[in-house]
Length: 472
Image (cartoon, rainbow, N blue to C red; front, side, top):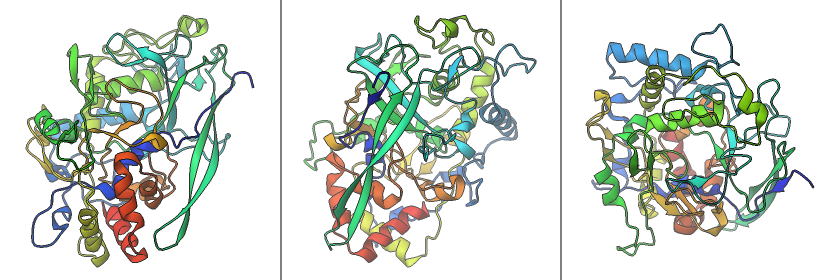
């Protein structure tokens, strides 16, 4: 069918979530009198932690900010939350939307600073899922090479007078399997289609990767983990023979003009909160900045090129810095139910499963320009490294050093509050898992041992492990 490209089949990018919820893999080296006791800490974000388990649990500022920082946090919140509009406009500093875009604000995808979900059907207006695009080869800095016509991201919305690039359609294939005790379960695998391609046929060999908007909490704390800590955790040659070989992703730092360790995004393709924010402003909303000053229109998209802009750049450095501070200092919610017997048993099972190489529990932050983030003992449950999650979860799309089957270990803090904040329990990189249980069962590659350990547990033990995750 002209203008449509079907994707899927192998399990795909479930990967990140894969590693993401290698939840069985909540990596940690535990000590103490009780196995798993080191995982039972309320202050997951150190002194920044917010003790709030309501629908606003992801939207509070770090508890230890100064008054001046709190004022800047509120300004950043405004530019993160409110819609951008088409230029020209009387709304000073908020025009320049598009001309091609996916959303009108950051919060359109990160609703209440939380996690997006895939649409329930083709007519679902919910935002939060997008498709990354590239072709074989790399750009000038070793990153993914954008398609000459459709660029690096499918933008399915546009301002008046400009055609959206296309539409995303998702079908589902059910997969049946069972636990070791004979209990059956069903997973669903997505099949993606790009329909109504507006600027010509999609090229053969187009590489496509679906990405769900993750929760924004704790990003500044992750940025403050020293590079040396990540290099210490990395084991690219699996020297210890445990079957886990985490690697840092080396990416291009635009502000510094040099290669740096990637930390953010499903494949750790961004080195800093600022660059993550600026990249999202450009790709998702069509807003230029000093880091990315060029409109994201290709030569084939004439109306996009001719559209009125909101200035050069459309978001200035001061406002970008406010949004960066906001995203850096969203507080991590506290762990809950620490005295619950099932939660404590779940912590033990996390340790006993041997899944300690990906979701490393504890880190200490180093120096950060925002003093509140410095010197904090935190439990994000991630090593921020790339892990090969196997062919079944591969998207086949490299990103800098990350291969088509490698994904960054996502943090697990706050994962138990997604349903409260966002009203769903969709997990993994593309939201295919309908529960934490399904997320674990999607693991493969380096996460296969964790998955198999989970499958071998009794029903009561599986429930305890899930209860532990829900307490985070």
